[in-house]
Length: 604
Ligand code: F6R
Image: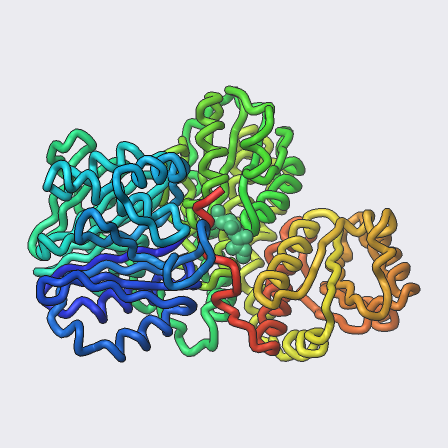
């Protein structure tokens, strides 16, 4: 997973390339590079580390690039080869004066490399991408036409790729192509831009062409021509994007994560008031007798909570499973299954594979995603957009609650389809309506949470516990803390504590418990906390209880508004997100771009 960009126009391309890469930084940020053609000469600049290092280099070399209106760029999240300057893209070849940038993974690169070496390729890097550069370069020596060379070369690749290629011999065109990796082409006015994602191109144009797999485009400054894999020209629609530039700014917040946390009430409000689930899920087959929810990471946690809700209000058994496990075992999906794939990005390789497999087994599929234009959607019989707006912080927050509310609304719809519009379903509906205001109550008063977070920031290990629907919340709270503060955190169903993890407890481990008093397990959870207290653990409650006796038990209490247990995950996640945020911020971590991570995991 990486970000790629290409620009051709009348203007100097450097600013467009670096602006575009800045907007793609969430996709990777361990090295970056650009290639340009300046006065008919191909030039490549690369730097290890954050994009700013590359920008500093480009500033130093400004004189060398005064006349370059064509270029490609890349921001890397390393897969093959450590992040260093040699492994950074663009990559070049000794066969031809071309440079390429690549997002994806080439599975057969070793075989291709061996063959290319026998043909004279001189390899410099450890990347799979360099194979593509040499392969295209070699094909170019055979055909003398870059587009044909790209079509011929990509036919030999196994794996995923989105590519932009420039050629010193033809400084008037960029070639772009893709398979199993996203790529869009923005049509401007006497300038065109190519990017892995919308933010990279939106400041130039809102008119876009979505390249489909195995299509190859020739992009000049005036024109975009698209060809199929047989080299035949094809007509492509131009879509108009409805995205405001403001969505891509921090709006006065210190970090995108904090901005996105604060966007949640309105996103949830809009989804509750929309009729999106009913509009999209029409004519669901009547044979469905089992549901599988498949996702990864934060999206998986939303799915874990949904199992509780769906099973509570429908008669359908639900299994929630990590996509990376589902795809490598003989699972029980069949034609009577409803498989719900949840993916914010819609580009997560494991989840895409899972949904493809589910379709192959003739299951009915629903995709819950923030990106209706994403790769996973082709495997969905029904698509439920979560409409959270572009999420820039690598740590997911607003997309999580938007997925959750969508799953709640879907559960209600499934219950109604079963003619089970019973009292429980009606109550659930009315409880959901209270969520946005209750989220706002917490977000309007975050000082207590921030102060507690600062006090907790000295600890190195945390345990999160809960029962019922909030087990998923505990897991999500632990994940948020881990990923942005690099503090070890584990979540357990509270009943599991005494089966082993209690051995860890002493005064060095804070235990964060989510307690919802109207739930059947509330007293049991209190007992678990007492057991932890007896082992001197530092105890923090996130609770809607007003029970004064809790003040003796807990070191800190984060009070949340009164809430029914079944919808409480939509509320308990807010203090959990804030605890993680304030700890990471206090520790001076790179909140929006945590180390080793990237926003969409397009590799298995
Ligand atoms: C955590 C996070 C990841 C993603 C996971 C799945 O904050 O963002 O755990 O949730 O990589 O991504 P999507 O939802 O895009 O499939």
